[in-house]
Image (cartoon, rainbow, N blue to C red):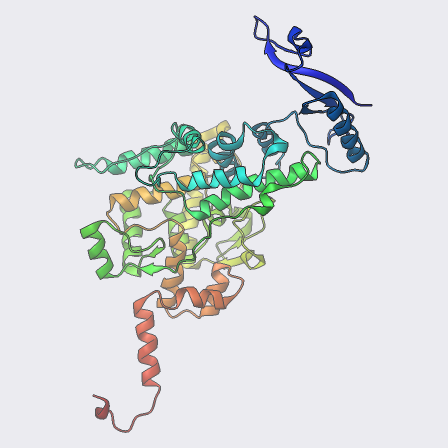
Length: 474
């Protein structure tokens, strides 16, 4: 049986809400009518008696309460009107028990910087497609607001949430840039501060990743019958433009040094610059040099490199690493069944990894009781898992200090592919090494990347045609 009550938001001198006890409720125009009804128990089995309203009259409240009770008896979802969306995001992420640390950190960042400041104040059952669209529109305006346009209230909240996080670096003349960059990356790895901030607009891919987090949270709320539908299913997202890798040719490097402009979002080093980077790592005594060498030559994804385990390696006989399925139910680091693969590392990588294992043993002795036994190949100095962003940040810092043409850490994977092409490796083998589902995808992306490879193919094609008179075409 529903309970009907008239309530308001007035407060007493102590600031306590009066609710149904306000003396002004005798006035016809003061307050509103609410209905409390019996809903099915929640996932925890506890009794649920949500309030519905406000309604203008008692009669309307009674009519609506009967409808709600009928819907509840039919098994239809009963909205949770006592929970804000921000509260639900906290409940949802706390229930994700199988996320690996890096994925959890990514989800928590999406919630902290975008989900809660943007929509956290809304009632869970009141989140609509329009709210999500407004959030993504505001995200697209971060560091990208048209000149003369005032930021929306949504954008102001997002900027306020991001304000404590940014760290902007600047080039100086005293050679301190590398020190500052690496110090920032180290602080972030230790959980003592943010990582690098490039002050660039958010990409469509980044917005889509945030949407996947919010959509999953709303989807769980729907499955638990806390909301009647998942508004995230009908949101129009910005399209992610697929881009092909571009190689850093001499002409592009010269233009970049003159203007500072990078030709494209996905850039690839030719073998000579990849070698310069690896040499710089050796010269500087870079601790993660074995990881960078492995990714540059074998093309592992960042999550794969950070997640590979010693138990899945054989560095003496077959010289291989196994990239296996993780326990992370939401990890998108492994893209397909083809991503679960055995990678031949080669003699040089096997030697580097063997030396790295000895170093790790020394670090374990030094850490003593503080050592974290993760079983991972690549770890922090205390044995804990590497923060994946830390790996990228150190990479960016070294490239900047060496004044190398800029690429993202993920682009080392493209470097590995193009270097294998330049070395004459078969396309199907390259596809298998990278973990692509279809080798046609590999061919489509990489065939035209390295000019030397394309030129060699053109010369081989011409040479394959028998000619009796060569000079006539001249």
